[in-house]
Image 1 (cartoon, rainbow, N blue to C red):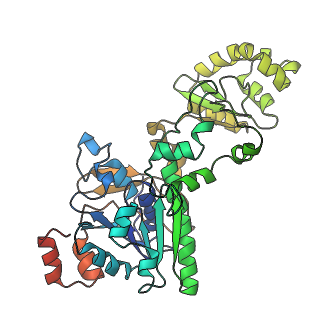
Image 2 (image 1 turned 45 degrees about the horizontal axis):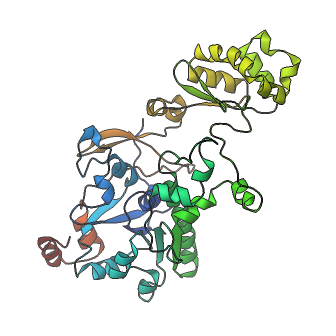
Length: 405
């Protein structure tokens, strides 16, 4: 594990106002912070980002500062609090927006209107401001006011229709793929709008929806098939598996491994198994292998079950064949490949303690990813409102005493 601190990054000097919670929006601003941007996170008082109340928690303690999703999604940011229902909220957000280059929000339509958060509203006083809106269905269209969540995004984008076994119900993909893809898409859109603003002085609205971001990464084949015939679900089976039976996924003595195939891969696979029963010329033909898959598996399975998934993976790759073991969390943490690339970063949080965190999703040669723990709720209130915004200490104290911040 390593510990990297911020020196300079591609976005050093860029100020971002973060009005997001959950996963998609915070992941977008996490990526911005990782590149050196000063991300000012505004959390709804008194309990903050809704993700603070989302488990799992460090030590199983349901504490606002111990939510593992929050700790991961908000590294490198500064936290301020604001009662979004207060009369002062719209003006305070307007004043903060005037001090930044980019505003990222994922507010529901009613709250967005109530707080007057929009590119059109800010454009007169902040012509170069970029406003990135991260929503489930976009700012326009018949679904604009509809509610969404991960399973809804996966269902409507078509991903569930092509996931699962062919004779079973559609399946939700594990994790929160749609949310993270939406965050990445918003990140790219915001960067391009920032680039445009820096060159022309003209800000703009970036409208990023989870439905479109998720549909965009749906297999092109599935989209094209709309004019031909629907694609069936394959389960674990792939066109590159050896047998097209049980897919390319096989059990080992300590887990599972995916075995694929490259040109000439069958011969390499046979050499790895080293069993003369597989060295018959007719098995070089895939159709024959499919027809005789039970016979082949009866030979292959004992060999696999006698070995570990990592050993099989590395031996297969040494022979230039495609493979990958099904990694459990402990496998990822102990990966010698990730360790050598210094992917994990040790961060120490005053409440949650020290732990390894996932690092940068990409590298800039000669520049470190900015790694700093997630903020405590309202930890940077004074520095944001007084030092950054220029509010007088007396007014700041009044807002503090009246629970506006």
